[in-house]
Structures are given as structure tokens and as C-alpha cells.
Amino acid sequence: MNRSMILACLATCSAAPALAKPKPALQVDDAAATIAWTNVYESAGEDWINDIVALSDGDFLAVGFLNRIDGETPSDWRALASRFGDDGKIEWTKEYGEGGAIDAFWTAREADDGRLTYGGFTTRIGPGGINAYVAATGEDGSILKENAYGTPGYDRITGLAPSGDGFIGAGHAEGVDGRDIFLIGVDRDGAEIWRRVFAEAGSNGALYIEPAGDGGFIVTGGTSARDDADMFVMKIDAKGAEIWRRLVGEPGTDDINHGLAVLADGRIVAAGYTNSWGAGERDFFAATLSKDGDIISIGTIGGSGDDRAMSAKADSQGRIFVIGHTDSAGSGGMDAMVAVLQPDGQFADGVVLIGGAADDVGAAIKPLTGGDALIGGYSASLGGASSDAFAARLSAIRIRPHPVFKASKIK
Image (cartoon, one colour):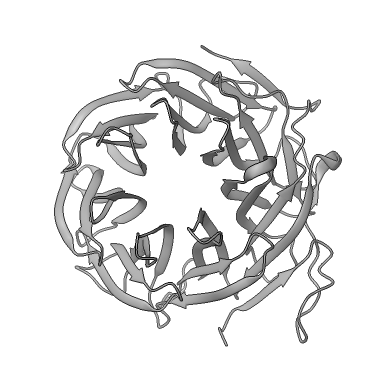
């Protein structure tokens, strides 16, 4: 049995297993959706779900980490993976890397043969410091191969895209002048084939990578120097060579990337949060670019407070579901917030708020057919000793106007 307590429960938590205390349920503001079920993953420390991906057999895989305790020496973060059906029934849950180290998954992909490949970071293996990390497991989550790469500093992989018989990982590596954009091509076992580091002034890092649909790849991330942070969108070829790059943002403000989707027609949607435009301290924003990198539209949605998008994924209709958190309104502290970017590149006029009495953050989203969505993140409202990781299904989502949040067309 895992050291962390793992609970699979309905929104009422009436199905909690023996020996597990019933958990408070997250609530949806103003009946804008229903929570069909919630899976909770907890430890003594902070626990996060960072990504949820669909698998070929209809299952889903949620990845993240458990037991983050800042300042604890030695650290014992454990990478987390949980496989479950669309009804929330857990097939298996695994922890990786126990034993006085830092291990975290940030994303995952399924290979053609059913094996699972994860990207993240670790201190347990590699050249030193925090190392970029790729692990391959079987369909049952059993480790087949682990690889780590990087510098003696802080390196990580946060995005993976399938490429040939392997994957391209995107993240950052520690550089002389801060962080550098880090791209690595690996085979199906995670063994390195090629590597590219873009060493530039300031601090730069990639977060996401997706196939462009023409043999190339789209990479997004951020660059910052002298109190100015911008989002970048870059196209690369299959060997990591840069084809073009665009910056999105205004001088002297923060425009932060936290989401990427490439649509069937080649348009690129890069999402995140901004204080360059919008209604409040920070707002959700999304920029839509052509396949050649020309900015087509920019839209925002937010209230008077701090609204930060943390993930964005497309549905089958070309809409982008964006999830993050807000303190502009809600049940208490921060609430998870879902907004929808329409196919015209502008936000629908409305949001869905999910939360409890404490802080609740949405960090992962996977749209489903029929307008439902799987969401994940971390919550301090679920009754654990600290923030607990969760995955949940939102059903009957109704994006409708909210008195606090305003959608704006910037371009």
C-alpha cells in the first residue's frame, strides 16, 4: 500500500473506503456544472496534479507529485501517476522515487505500443542538482527505464511531444545568465538522441510542445529580463532547429505562458495570464497565431483580483478549455476557475468556479465529448494536513455570464 492515502470518491464522498475519513467536497459556484466524482491523493506535504492525458483504451492518466515540504532536508517528493476510467474508477496509482530525493512528473504521453512516457525532474539520478527527467513505464505503471539530463543546476522537462519512434522534451536548463530553453530528442526508452540549448540574455524556459501538423513542432514558454516578462511562441523542426519565434506581451509588464493548443487547421493558441491587459491585477489571456506565427487575436477574461490560467486544452469543436485560479470571487481564498476560448479566439462571457473554504487551484484540464471535462490540481479545502492533489470530472458545464468576470477583446 502506498504511504500516501489515496481516496476515490463521489462528490458527496459517500463511497470513501474503510479507514478513510470522509472528505469535504469541492463545490461549483452558481450550479454552473456538477462534479460527477473526485479522486483525492494526499500525503503529509503539498500534493499536485500537473497534467491529465487521454489513453488509447479510453482510460486517463493523471500525473504530478506528492509530499512537497519546502525547506525539508532531505526532501522526499515522490512522482505520482494514477490511471483511471472516465467514471473515476482507479485502475492503479503509483509513486516513484521514494527515499530522500525530489521526483516529480509534469506531463506524460502514451507510445504506440501502450507504454507510458513521463517528463519531469529528479535529484535521485543525473549529473547533479535538479535534473531533467524522462521515465518509461509499462501499461501497468511498472518502471522500464529512467534517464536524467542537464547541468549541475536546476533543469526540468515540462512538455513532451511524440516524434518518430520517440519524443521531444521541452523545458529549461540552468545557464550562465539564468535559465535557458532546453529541447531534447529521446528514443522510446528516453535515451538521448540530440539536445539543443538556447542560451540567451535573461531567463528563458520552455513549458509546452505540440506537433505542428506539418512535421514541425510548436514550443511555448517565457522570457524575462529587467522586470519584463513575455510569452514566446516558437516553431522548430524535428531536430530542434528554430524556424521562427514570436513574443507576445507589452513592455514592462508580465505576460506569462501556461497553456498551448495546436488546432486542426494549424492555428496556435498560447494561453496564460497577464497584467498588460484586462480588468484586474492579473487576467487569463490567450493569443491565437497563424501557422506562420502571425498574431490573429488576443483575448482576456478576469475580475478585479488575481486570475491566473495554468493549463489549456482544445476540445473536438476547436474550443479551448482554460483552467487556473482566481481570488476575484468564489467560496473562499483562491478558487479553481474554468473559462472557454471560442473558435474566434475570444473568451466566452462567463466562467465556472470550483472550490471550498480554503485555497483551490486548477492546474490541469482535459475536455471530453459532450462538453464535460476532467480537471486536476491541488486543494486545501479537502480536509488534509496541507494541499491535496485531486482529479475530478465536471459534467453539464454551462459557461454563462458572471457579475465579477469580464471578457475583453484586445485584438
